[in-house]
Every structure is written in C-alpha cells, then in structure tokens.
Length: 453
Length: 125
Image (cartoon, rainbow over all chains, first blue to last red):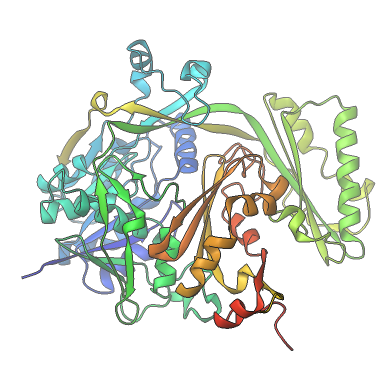
C-alpha cells in the first residue's frame, strides 16, 4: 500500500499573497502547509526591525496567516512549518501562542520552536576558537568587518524540525532554516527516511526547491507560453504529493488558476541554480542532473529518478554587516528626445554633485525604458515615449547621501525640459546591510527544540 | 550540399529563468523541444554567452549541461553590481538577466534548420 503525503506551499517570500495559506488549507486535501518567509534581503530587514524593538525581527504576516488558517488546520489536522521566526523565533512563537489563545484554540495547537541558528552571541568565541568565517567568494576573514556585524545565522537543516514534529508540534516555527528543510522535514517525519537515505533525501530537497517559491512553479512568473496561462488572478499554489520512495507529483488544487506543466516546473528547477551536480544542503547533496520530469495528466507533473550523496561537514552561515548608506532617485523624461533629455539630466546632476564636493563609493545611472536591464543589447532608446532617469549613490558618509537626495527635485525646474514623475518626493536614505556568506563546521552549531502549547 | 545558413533567435527556441547568488546571476536556458537541445549545447557556449553580455558582466561565465531537463545552466559572475543589498541596479537580484540571453541570434545551416523545423528569424510574412 503506497501512502501519499501532501505538502502544500503557501508562501514564497515575506510579502507574498496573504490569501494563499488559507486557500491551500481549504481548497482540498493537504497534510502539511509550508511557508517560506526568508531571503537574505529579508533577514537584513528583520534585523533592522529587531534593533528598533527587541520583540520584533520575525515575519509578522505569519501571525495573520495562521489566524486565517487556524479553523481549517484544527478541523483537518494540517501541520504548518514556517521559517517565519527570522532573527527572533522566540518572539514569533510567543506572538503566535497569544494569537492562537485569542482565537479560542489555546491548548489545542502545539507550537514547536527551533533555535540555535543564531550565532551572533558566539561570534567572538568562534573566531577565538579558530573559525575564521572566511567570505566564501573573496576568502577574506570575518575579522575585517567584525565591528560592523549585525547578525549571523547558520542555515540549519531538517533534523530539528523533524524532532519538533515527533514531539507533537502542529505548527513549527524556525529561524534561518533552509527553504528546502521546510518540505523535507515532514517527509522525513512521515516516511522515517534514514539520515543516509541519500536518494530519498535528495528527492525531498528537489520537492522543497519546487515549492519554496510559491506560485513560481505553478504558472506565476512563467515565461513559457505565458499568454495562455489561465486565471492568474486566482492562481493555485503548488502541492507536492510524495511517496515513500521519494517520487512525487507536483499539482495544485482543482478550480484554481495558473498551470502546473513540465515547462513551469522546469523553470523553477533552474531558478537560482549553481552547479547542478551538487546542490548542497545541510541534509544531503542533491544531483539535479538526475531529475526526471514528465507530464502526468492535467496540471500534474511527475518527478522521479533523483539521486543524492552525503552532506558536507559544513553549514553555510549568513552574516549581515553594516556597509554604509545608499539612496536612489528618479525622474521621468518625455518624448520628444526623452533619452537625450535624461542623459543631459544625468550630466548636470553629476556635475552638481561634483561641485558640492560629495564623494561616493559608487554612482550608478540607469535609463529605465531604454537600457536598464539589457544594457548595450537594448538599442539606443532614441524613440522611447518616455525614459525614467534613475540614479543611485552608495557610500560611507550619510550626510553626503542626504545631500544627494536634495539634488534630484531641483532638476524639475532647473534642468532639461519635459520632466515629470516626482510625486513620490525626495529619495529616502537607506542603510546598506551587506551579506557575508561563510562556512562553519557543522559540529559547532547546536540546535534546540521546544514545544509549547 | 547546401552551405547557406539562416538566423534563429534564441527567444523562439528556448525559455529561461534567472536568479542570484551574491554577485552572480544564474541563467537557466530550456529548449522548447527536446530535439533542439543539442543545438543549444553546440551553439550556446560559455564564450558565446560571455561575448553576448560583454560589459554587462565583469567576471567569467560557467556552463553546466542538464540533458535530463533539456537545459543549460549558466553562471554569470560579476553580473549584479555587487548583488543583493549592495547593488544600486533595478535588477539587483538578476531576475531578468536571462531575458537578455534570449536576444542571441544563432547561425544555423539551412538544411539543419529545415530538418529540425526551427523557426527562422525573421518569420516569413
């Protein structure tokens, strides 16, 4: 008797559809709902929020998402796995427990918290013990930016989430778990895959990769035949129906829009891909050149044949550090000669910044509508009906960046003609939080699981 | 024996998706038909792609083959102006870097194009 476990994706990033989680729970049978809230950019936003308020630093949308699915998950016994904890999983779980009690389900829904990914309090201890936390691309030791470090989180795998499920948690909240662990953990929990069942584990990773970006595998952002993808207004988020041997079908609930097809799934498979022979995770190294995908009926794609090998002795660590300030401003120039006017505005602005004696690490101009994303491949943009002149500066001196933000608006009256699009006001100065990817010996990262009701 | 060649635009024979890893963009290029994949393997070399992007990228290009998906994966190093939160670019996360790839024009022998039913560019009126 083959048993199927259905894992549904309800969130591809923090800011994704507020309705998708409830639609996944109520639109048809599922066993698990996975919600992925974290990207590197998200971690830096959360870190800034936690600095302002120590009770923040998690994806607050998650609380609303759980409120919207609570009746459904209680009725149907659906379990939820989310990395919504961000840089403050404990505060997230506390807010969650409060919301559950307020909704009248207190005591009925156990919440598991996974911690231990936060290495910030241990940085100096780790450096002193000889863990250089070298930048994975440049090789520079972390000591070069140590004083600017804001957060440091290890990407942790599925094991602690599996433990939380084994302890009876119905909702598991993690910090910086890998996106794929959110799908892998329920599969390991249900099927009891051994820690060295490399092929099954690799299949779990591939399923997780297909689910982790929400509707991006079920017709959203799909270039293939995009005009004919039906009813994206009511797009169905993807669901993996997984068997114990690791084969699975990607599908979506009946009556929803979007499309699950070999092309839609394949586009997601190659998204953010590195060396396909070794997709490295804390649980397993998956070989994406082994994946077989085949149509299996309408809005069903069968995925099988996946192989994998032992995990590496390392975990990836994502370190955020302060790296100066930036601001981006823009104006829109209209036909005739929109591009020429925008180019003149750029020359004038740069000359003014120069006369003011302002120095930046970088000034970048783009002409949106002409060449911002395709550069020299775009043609000259001479006939464009309008061109957005978009200029950004970055540097270590906040006052210089502030001064820059005052230099855009004057161009409306004292620069080239046919200019508009300044209703948004002065550009905002943002602090730049940069990323420092590093590796660390797995053995020094200890995760902790707590289940509360 | 025919020596004439025709133009085939990548947009008409493949679809793509891209994403980021630090300052690197990846571009997955998937053949629209399995029988067109060998043409991509032959024509879409790392050096061809590197030359196409030119000054849009500051580093090298790596290529990986995924015959199981009829796809090639390219890693474009130094494509994102520092990447992530550092980059001042509109497309700081490389989301549309792969659409620029679709502009590539391949020169294909006319008889091969006919045998593979390749859409020739520009399309006949």
